[in-house]
Length: 293
Ligand code: GUN
Figure 1 (cartoon, rainbow, N blue to C red):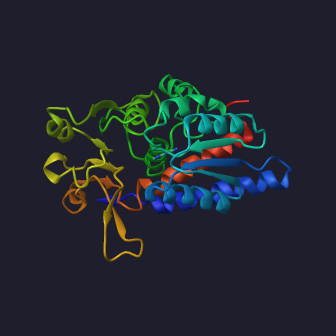
Figure 2: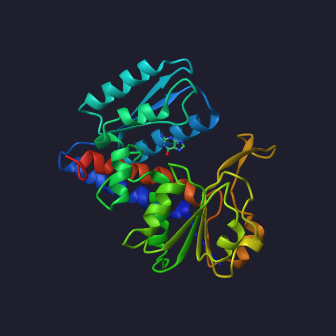
């Protein structure tokens, strides 16, 4: 069993991006500028956005954090998106999800200029990804592809089972694993909460990507010998031993599943660290206008 060290790969990517920013700086080019919009004070969102802003600093990007209280109106948020769309200094921006119930996430996402949508959530980016055109790919699936690439894990002709069908992870992951490219060329099955034969599907999988948000969902009796297991779960569990007061739980029962795997990602330190670096890479592309003019 080989552990996929997302923390180490993310550190390597951080170094590569920082070197590229240095080259841009030395040649007098535009320093990439990412803006993040945060609504309310959800603990998870606060942490994610703080990490995104900190990573921007580490790689040498400019960053702006725009905060709103929980009671911001949809109109105010749409006006903010419009300002960011028109601000020539902002290369890319994200609106951290989830948003409060009185705001339509889809309306906000569709208001973002797809050329600045470094989250890759806008229908134009999702559509372009689906048909294999250059675009911004959402960060978690892009991070997983990068791990498969850097560990040179064979995917061609393999059966990949994706557990979960979210717009952010499950659906794009399934699309990417079936694309006619490496990593890809898989036979893909998507299972979800209504799937009846989920265990049988998993048992026939060479690669399993678990993105359900259900701690320890994937058990040893669902995994065949030699499978590759990618755990996207990041459920916050209360803990009395950590300083933050919580610890992250993955979707895989790691202790019993890992001995059966050829490769497996841990939680924390697997997919998580890669997600932010994928966003940084998208922002680098946005700064260089290398995907869209
Ligand atoms: N909430 C959870 N993951 C993400 C993400 O990748 N981007 C945004 N904007 N919100 C999220």
